[in-house]
Structures are given as C-alpha cells and as structure tokens.
Length: 284
Image 1 (cartoon, one colour):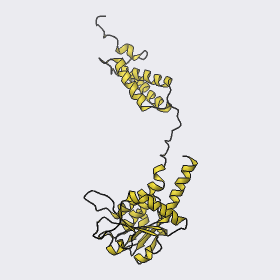
Image 2 (cartoon, one colour):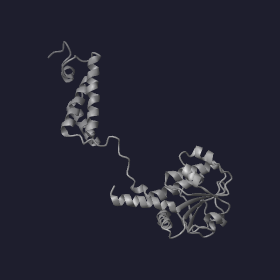
Image 3 (tube, one colour):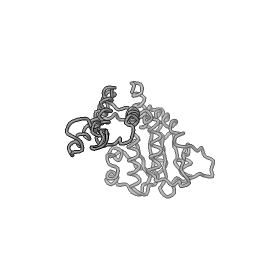
Image 4 (tube, one colour):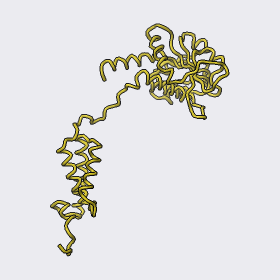
C-alpha cells in the first residue's frame, strides 16, 4: 500500500469517531451486546442508550468479548433530546414505510455523505452523526423520526424483520467500507515469499508425477502423453510457486516409494519399464 493510501485509510478510520450509534428503549441486553460486537468489528466506538430496559456491562462483555473499551464508554440518556441534542445530522433507521413524506435513503447511498459529515465533526466543524435505532418490537415512532434529517431503510426480501444488531451491522459495514474497508489489503500468506516455480522445477514435478502414475498402474490403455499434457495444463493454470511445486513432487515420490515397499514394484528400476512390459508368457 502506498503512503498516500495508508494516510487515507487512517483518515477514514479517524472519521468514524464522529459517528454515534443511538439505541432507543432497548429491551434486551443481548441486543446491546450484539450491537457493540458489530460496532467493534467495523470501527465504531461511540454508543448511546436511551432508557434501556436492561444495562448489565458485565454480562454484555461476557457476550461481546474484547469490547471493554466500548462498554466503558457507553452513555446512558433519559430522552431522545438528551442523546441527540449535540448531533448535527441524524439518520433514523426503520424497516417500515410511513405515510408522512420523508427523505428516504439506503445505507450504501448515504454512507459516503455520512463519512464526510463525520470527518467534519472530528475536525470540530459540527456535532457527531447519529445512527438512531428504535426498540426491538416497534422500531422508531413517528415522533422520533421527526427529529431525524433522513430516514434510512435497509433493502430486504419480503421478510423485513431484521434483528437490531443485524441492522446496526449493515450500516456499520457500509460506513467501514467507505472509511477503510474497500482499500484494506488481504492478509499475506504465511509463506508468501517463495518465488514462482521455474521450468526446471516443473519438469522435475512432471517426471515424478508420471512415475507415480505408472507405479499405481493408472495409465492402462490411456495415452500417456495425453494424460500428462492435461496434467501439465492443470498445474500451469494453478501457477504454483517453488515451495508448492516441491510439495507436490514430494507426494508423488512417496507414492513410488510406498508401492515399492509393499512389493508392487521391484526395488530398483523405472515404474514405466515394469508396467509397460508385456506380462510373463505373452508373445513378444
């Protein structure tokens, strides 16, 4: 990753500090734990609870392991006004369409704008962006949505009943992808430093592969050249490195050794010579 790309990722992650997740009248601490787990996975760190039915940090951390920092930072509020008062932009998350004409969006559509606003918040140019979720059984009331700048609906099939933590995870994921996830490099393999297999290594592999196939009498009436040509193409499409080519070769060498040990081949000589020879008593 370039230095510029790394700086952009760091800036995107820092911008997520300008986002607060707000849960209104949550009824089950298990859903709070699920929300905190989703937030931790996708870089969100600020949670506000409004009149939660149950708040048990010890049990929540027992469900969402490794989230002590988020749990300790969670704020408890007694009203929507208290939880949202300092927010410059509020997104009301709902699964139900309403009669009132509201500005409606989708998570993927709104995430870039939210990240820009969150970045402004971190820079001291406004309050945080709030993602507001309602209680598990009824969601957000119209009165709660009246306090929101936009309404966001997660597209689903005809069954639109998402678990609270699932709904938080979807929005958190879209925010994370905008902030950092889209450019996040895949973890390098443990042994990713082996050079590509050269022609000599591949030819050794093919030689020992052919010996092993003769040892187990695979060819029979098959055309040896045709079979080996197919195997060559398969191996080249796989594009093995030197370590992988050596690993495959070791397997086929051991096949020949095993067949010799159990008496399927004489101790010395090429398997091809024995398998292709006519059976005893056959006319030459």
